[in-house]
Image (cartoon, rainbow over all chains, first blue to last red; front, side):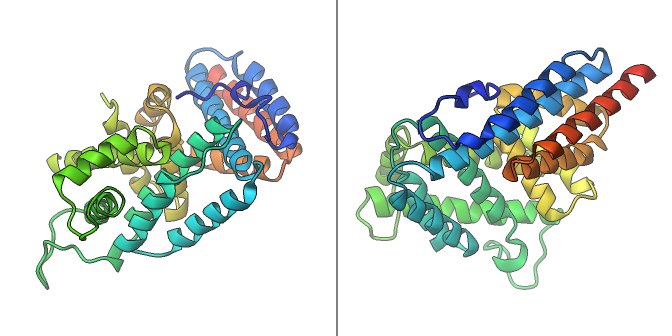
Length: 218
Length: 94
């Protein structure tokens, strides 16, 4: 996926109209930034990336949320916002279900994809922000884990994500006995291919798992 | 040096070492997650070269988001003007 500045979002059905002035300024910025050379050129590239991403994310979010039939979607957004405020595995399963069930929206699929990815990233980050609100399951009372608090945060987050993913697979694709098995996880892998929200979430889970391993290896 | 998964690790570490608030750290990490892997390279190179850029970029990102959210083109113009001044100074310094 790539964010082509503004052009990807032009003429998209249902897009909020009043981004045009923002796009004009960013277009001017593009021309200004392109003039620089040497070290300044590298920095200009990053500033342009920040602009592209800021605009892309804003357009995606507002477009998707403002589509036709918004009643259903709005309620979906509200449910996600509400669920994000809650903590723990059960809520993570709920969030996964919502991501999995993002409705198809004709004319705004790209916006939906980006929005789905954004929400998945937010969930990841939210889980890492739980700090001391979740216990670290492998530690006994009074025992301390070597490493920085951030490693503990990551481990806590991954524990919640891992459990939630298994429970979600059991709930959606299994016998719903609360014990995820290999067959259910395989069905989850298949379902992932058709669900952008879920796909992004699982991809990020992989990215974060690798992050955790890299931190431990240092 | 930092490729693929290590991009996020590197950014997360730089954020932890910065003086940004937790909220701003999370927000910038979201930005990095959202940036396609293929386009992260100049960002990583800049922060590797000078970690203080993470703070400047976070401020730039926040300001742009605010301007977009409020549809405030005057603010956006001012941000671009500031970028131009800063880059001119860097270019002159060589």
